[in-house]
Image 1 (spheres, rainbow over the protein chains, first blue to last red):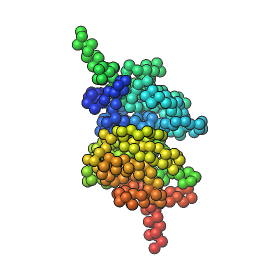
Image 2 (tube, chains in turn orange, purple; image 1 turned 30 degrees about the vertical axis):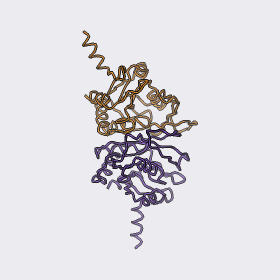
Image 3 (cartoon, rainbow over the protein chains, first blue to last red; image 1 turned 180 degrees about the horizontal axis):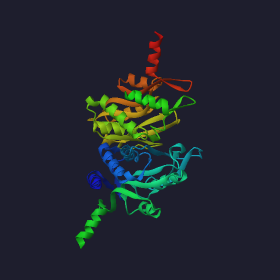
Image 4 (cartoon, each protein chain N blue to C red; image 1 turned 90 degrees about the horizontal axis):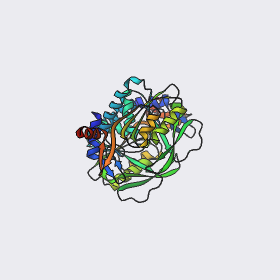
Amino acid sequence: MIMKLLEERIRHDGQVLPGNVLKVDNFLNHQVDPELMLTMGEEFARLFRDNGITKVLTVESSGIAPALMTGLKLQMPVVFARKHKSLTLVNDLYTATVYSYTKKVSNKISISKKFLGAQDKVLIIDDFLANGQAVAGLIEVCQQAQAEIVGVGIAIEKTFQRGHQLLKEKHIRLESLAKIAAFENGQVVFTDDSDNHVAADK
Amino acid sequence: MIMKLLEERIRHDGQVLPGNVLKVDNFLNHQVDPELMLTMGEEFARLFRDNGITKVLTVESSGIAPALMTGLKLQMPVVFARKHKSLTLVNDLYTATVYSYTKKVSNKISISKKFLGAQDKVLIIDDFLANGQAVAGLIEVCQQAQAEIVGVGIAIEKTFQRGHQLLKEKHIRLESLAKIAAFENGQVVFTDDSDNHVAADK
């Protein structure tokens, strides 16, 4: 249901740029639709309601809005990792290196040790899952903190890129609200569209 | 009321570091308390409810949480300006330079032209007002867009630094939820505390 809502929004307001880059800066990562974020947060909270989550974890900046609404609905604090161009070793931080394929730069992300520990059950939230570098960095800081990773909630997943496989290999539960299977002629094809295609072919 | 709530939270969870830096990273700008953000958003929405706001504007990353909740309650979109280390002139962006006194670096902030225009009535939201550099940058992009600035909503204001005066000189309405008048012996003194002191002295 939320998946349908988000997919329709992507179809209506998303823009597919050359190189199959999906731009959703009018409702998700530059201009933000708060009501849509709340609906997404409600859905993530519903999906992970029974898992005893103690902390919602994301990385600045685009992950903050969906993570905040998820935390609101789970009644749990949200922590957002900070991005830094460079960072010398600092004692009171967990850090990981994240490579961005779109920006072609490496950033360090960091979380203060006081906000993540072995007692925590963590839900990782982010706006996009493509190559999975940001999520891998968040997983790494959770491991450093010996926190339990309960699952990953993603707004928009590109199922054909490496992030999906990466989480599968780590046996981490993945819940994505909109799943993009491919781009065809500048149009987004969602995984359920492909299912429909298969069904129609029968 | 909200002011009292936020002041108590600052007293309880805030940390005054040497150099009179107030650290509130356990509920506002690293770990975030979603319920508190919602209460703050409700208060900003109440204060500006009758002003026909069409857009809530902030800058990544710490402004996003309070701005998102304000947008939710005003039922209006939120736009967060992006920070860049450097930025060559780009046609479709409004940009301004912001100097950070705490980090001692200049950043450019930018907003896509498609999300701000002459028809907009803007409420600027941010987590802190000290020297007012970030808010000044946001005002500058609004002016470039010929958008009307209805007011500025701040979570924590340090009334003794330049930001307050800067907004007063520009005749821009300022609403701050917690107002710090001074730091004394590592403790926060709020403006209403000072009022009480004055009253007690009479």
